[in-house]
Length: 473
Ligand code: UDX
Ligand code: ADP
Figure 1: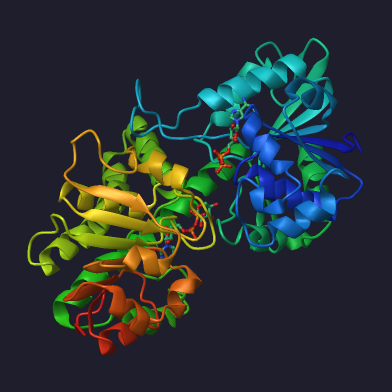
Figure 2: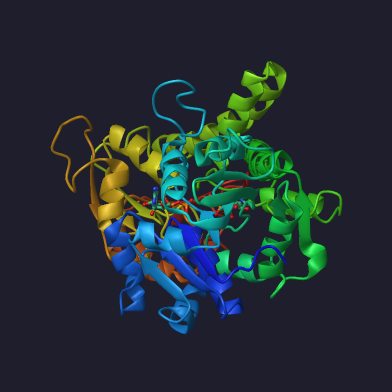
């Protein structure tokens, strides 16, 4: 075989790179894996003796780190050394939406990919397979190839002075909060590429724990576009069910009953039909924006308009939460205390990127609310940076103020309303009798995630509004 993979380097120790490499390391003890990052703090946290200090929280990650770290899984800032030693390099760096310049607000900012490709081109030695892991715009492989020095050489491979590269696309489909489970038992692995031997080398790694039938191979562009399409379809389902949630509230239907009724039709399927405060996370919005940008670039206005609506509906869904809160609290929340329970974009992660909680908090602050925030995994500093405000408002751009609390009960003390934003399991265990006693009455509970136990709040004298439920309790 042309490629023998003994050393892997992963560039980017984030939500994708960290868990993915931990799972590969645990299944491939004969491969040495170095995860590198330019962020020294992050690498320090990955190497922390205390596993509670790992930079990301993912169920199941700790035990893999305990098993593999410093054996065949290493975290380091030494970019040059580990790129030079690698037979295969995964690119897992950040790919946010561009904030300025051409394609601003839609296209993906490729500056991290660009600089990564330049690092690879500078330091790599010998035959190296470069694998795109981050979600990327279609045709990014072309850019990477060009940077790696393909210009003077034939199609499939290209050489710089003493190195030879081949580029594969291997998009990651893991969802945060279930990343380890998704990586251990994926629905499929997708590998796009032009050179069969390189594709086989990567397939061989996955075949240590994944059945051959689940490994799909395609051309490069199909693999890149499939990732964008998968995320667009998933996001579209959420916007669809969320649109119906509003209709349920207006008509007296219940969105969970509707979801159950339609989901049992196998053609529709029951997954991803949970109505909520709107989708967040680092991927959905970014990928749809990128799809829209691509469509416009290719003159497909109707297609881009279609996907834009998925985003518009999502924004609307989040906005109508704060609007409902203000309306129910007699049209004003000025000076009223509102507890926000849950700040991450979904349960079982400390990630807050595009979390609906950010938008909801900002809108309530603008209305003059006093916000108290509790989340089991998100830190005060993270919330500070997301809201862009100090603990108490000092710059007078908002009338409201916010505070971080370490417990549900403290966040709820004297609150006029509680909003359940993230579906953390511990919110299902809330003792509503106890909470009702510390709230200011008339007290409200806004349940945006259809918790099973919130009907009990009503029994203890709290008025309950449930998203997607037209029958007010
Ligand atoms: C997503 C894709 O699922 C994953 O395949 C891809 O690799 C990255 O993007 P992620 O964003 O981590 O993963 O989480 P996901 O579980 O998809 O949830 C995204 C958002 O949709 C969350 O805010 C979640 O609360 C929301 N959601 C999800 C719903 O509102 N309802 C649902 O039924 C499912
Ligand atoms: P994702 O969710 O896609 O994993 P993250 O933002 O969590 O995104 O992680 C991406 C990581 O990539 C960050 O820790 C960032 O510091 C790192 N990174 C970005 N550019 C480079 C680079 N040129 N070399 C090494 N690491 C990089």
